[in-house]
Length: 82
Image (cartoon, rainbow, N blue to C red; front, side):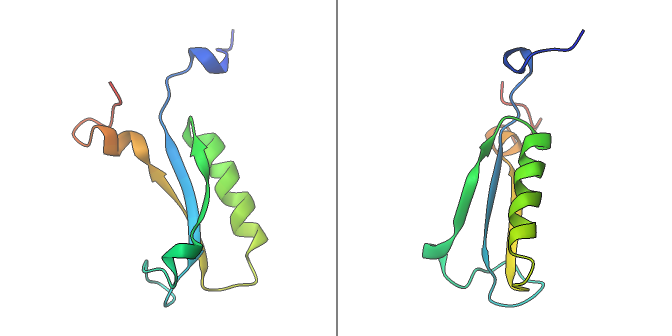
Protein backbone atom coordinates (compact mmCIF):
# COMPACT_ATOMS: atom_id res chain seq x y z
CA UNK A 1 0.00 0.00 0.00
CA UNK A 2 1.51 3.35 -1.00
CA UNK A 3 1.29 6.47 1.10
CA UNK A 4 -0.39 9.52 -0.37
CA UNK A 5 1.45 12.83 -0.47
CA UNK A 6 -0.25 14.19 2.67
CA UNK A 7 0.97 11.18 4.71
CA UNK A 8 4.62 11.61 3.73
CA UNK A 9 6.99 13.62 5.91
CA UNK A 10 7.89 16.98 4.42
CA UNK A 11 11.60 17.45 3.79
CA UNK A 12 11.64 20.84 2.08
CA UNK A 13 14.05 21.49 -0.79
CA UNK A 14 14.67 24.77 -2.63
CA UNK A 15 15.64 24.76 -6.31
CA UNK A 16 17.26 27.90 -7.68
CA UNK A 17 19.87 28.96 -10.18
CA UNK A 18 21.65 31.74 -11.94
CA UNK A 19 24.60 32.67 -14.05
CA UNK A 20 27.94 32.17 -12.31
CA UNK A 21 30.83 34.65 -12.44
CA UNK A 22 33.26 31.86 -13.32
CA UNK A 23 33.00 28.16 -14.14
CA UNK A 24 33.44 25.93 -11.12
CA UNK A 25 32.55 28.70 -8.68
CA UNK A 26 29.40 29.40 -6.74
CA UNK A 27 29.38 33.21 -6.91
CA UNK A 28 26.56 34.57 -9.06
CA UNK A 29 27.03 37.25 -11.71
CA UNK A 30 23.82 39.16 -10.82
CA UNK A 31 21.81 38.34 -7.69
CA UNK A 32 18.83 40.28 -9.04
CA UNK A 33 18.56 37.72 -11.85
CA UNK A 34 18.50 34.56 -9.71
CA UNK A 35 15.85 32.11 -10.87
CA UNK A 36 13.93 30.81 -7.86
CA UNK A 37 12.34 27.69 -9.34
CA UNK A 38 10.43 26.68 -6.21
CA UNK A 39 10.24 24.86 -2.91
CA UNK A 40 9.41 21.16 -3.03
CA UNK A 41 8.21 18.71 -0.35
CA UNK A 42 10.87 16.06 -1.02
CA UNK A 43 14.13 15.46 -2.86
CA UNK A 44 12.59 13.51 -5.75
CA UNK A 45 10.30 16.35 -6.86
CA UNK A 46 13.08 18.89 -6.34
CA UNK A 47 15.45 16.82 -8.45
CA UNK A 48 12.92 16.62 -11.29
CA UNK A 49 12.52 20.43 -11.23
CA UNK A 50 16.32 20.90 -11.09
CA UNK A 51 16.87 18.56 -14.02
CA UNK A 52 14.24 20.28 -16.14
CA UNK A 53 15.74 23.73 -15.56
CA UNK A 54 19.31 22.50 -16.05
CA UNK A 55 18.36 20.93 -19.39
CA UNK A 56 16.67 24.16 -20.52
CA UNK A 57 19.90 26.12 -19.96
CA UNK A 58 22.42 23.56 -21.23
CA UNK A 59 23.69 25.97 -23.91
CA UNK A 60 24.89 28.48 -21.27
CA UNK A 61 27.98 27.03 -19.58
CA UNK A 62 27.83 29.62 -16.77
CA UNK A 63 24.21 28.88 -15.82
CA UNK A 64 23.86 26.54 -12.84
CA UNK A 65 20.94 25.27 -10.80
CA UNK A 66 21.19 24.00 -7.24
CA UNK A 67 19.10 22.04 -4.75
CA UNK A 68 19.22 23.31 -1.17
CA UNK A 69 18.14 20.89 1.55
CA UNK A 70 16.07 23.37 3.56
CA UNK A 71 15.08 20.74 6.11
CA UNK A 72 18.74 20.50 7.13
CA UNK A 73 18.87 24.28 7.61
CA UNK A 74 15.77 24.17 9.81
CA UNK A 75 17.54 21.73 12.14
CA UNK A 76 21.23 21.54 11.20
CA UNK A 77 22.09 19.06 13.97
CA UNK A 78 19.68 16.30 13.00
CA UNK A 79 18.41 17.44 9.59
CA UNK A 80 14.86 17.07 10.88
CA UNK A 81 12.16 19.71 10.72
CA UNK A 82 10.63 18.65 14.03
